[in-house]
Structures are given as C-alpha cells and as structure tokens.
Image 1 (spheres, one colour):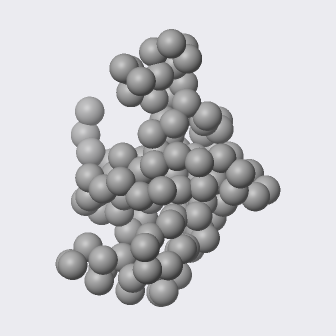
Image 2 (image 1 turned 90 degrees about the horizontal axis):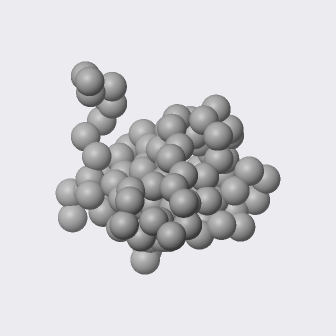
Length: 107
C-alpha cells in the first residue's frame, strides 16, 4: 500500500487528552508529525469524527482540533498485545504549533 502521509512521523511518546466536545480521555502518541498523530488507545472514535486533542509537552500544552482518519479497536483482553488506536489529522494547527513542533523536533 503506498504511503499517503505528507509528513514524516517521529516515534515519540507524548501524553494526550482527547474527546469530541472536551478532552476527557487520556492516551499516548505512538508517533506524531506536524500534521497529525497516531494514538495508542482502545477508546477510539469513528473515522470522520472531529476531536479536540491536547498534546502535553513539558514546556507547554497545545489544544488542536483534528479529524479521525482511521480507528482500530480490539477486544479488551488483547489491548496490550495487539496494536489498537486511531490516527488523527490536525485541522488548521496554526503557526504557533508549527514553530514549536519544528524546534522540538530539532532539539
């Protein structure tokens, strides 16, 4: 299957809170890029859902809206052994996020 991402993703673990109206669920990134994240979680939303994500870096927290692009849920007994989660593409992340991400990636 051909790669459909525009940006290279960094294999980094960052704490994320997320939800439809407010960020009430917690997960960690598997990878992230300037344009989106992959979350390791079994609490997924359907593709096409708009979600609010809060990326919690030591320096600051970013609140960004995104759209769920894919989601994979597994039986609870397998959640720690079989990959599950969802991919979120950011919607208009903004210049502040871009500037922070580029500096964070370089450092």
